[in-house]
Image (cartoon, rainbow, N blue to C red; front, side, top):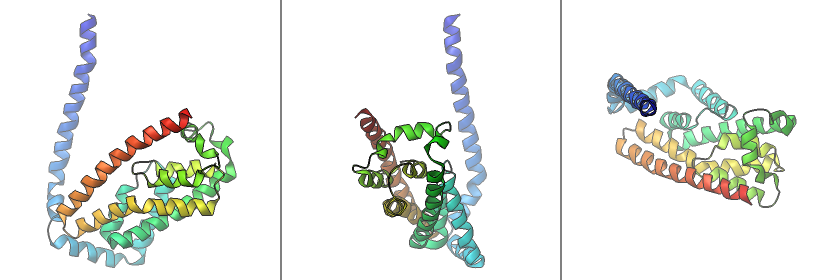
Amino acid sequence: MSEKKQQGPGKGRLALLGLGAVLLLVLCAACLPLIRWMMQPEFGGWLRGQVEALGVWGVLALLGVQLLQVVVAIIPGEPVELVAGAMYGAWGGLALCLLGCLLGSAGVFLAVRKKGRAAFERTSLAAQLRQYRFLQEESRLEGLVFLLYFIPGTPKDILVYVCALSPLPLGRFLVLSTLARIPSVVTSTWAGASFAGNQLWLTLAIFACTGLLGLGGIWFHKRFLAGKNQE
């Protein structure tokens, strides 16, 4: 009886994995016409035409989405950056995304600092605050903040909440975090721009490189946090 009970959960996981694989294949098949259209030479011209038709409203809409992504930290930033790159090019998308990050970070920083630490002790952020408690010390604070924002794969938008409860002034925080974000943001906007320009192999190469860097960054970030919290 015990062996049967132990085998049950394993079979259930395999069934779920199989179902997930089937659904993924169905989704890919359904999206195949769209993918083929996006790989056509005409796609880049069509996209540029749509962007020009949107005018300033397109810029404002994307800026608003980027700002919201910073405020609601669980929303991933990479899709927004890819779209920004596809719509406005690598450098135009970079400028737009950095402006959204700057405005969103400033708003979150000021709101969190006004509320104080006690307001977040019973929220889901409490565990994150404990993980980064070493940022409450003024020694080497600026260098640590820059490093954490520079490393790929770190929860950069959650770090806004953490840094707001540190002794770091708002102006220095915005300068450090914005400059340190540039490498990770520009790779995403570059990938989006190359995809819109029908440079599929370049897009795949950028994704492969950033994926490897991201995995390395996640590994380093975990080791870094473990080491700092053991001091």
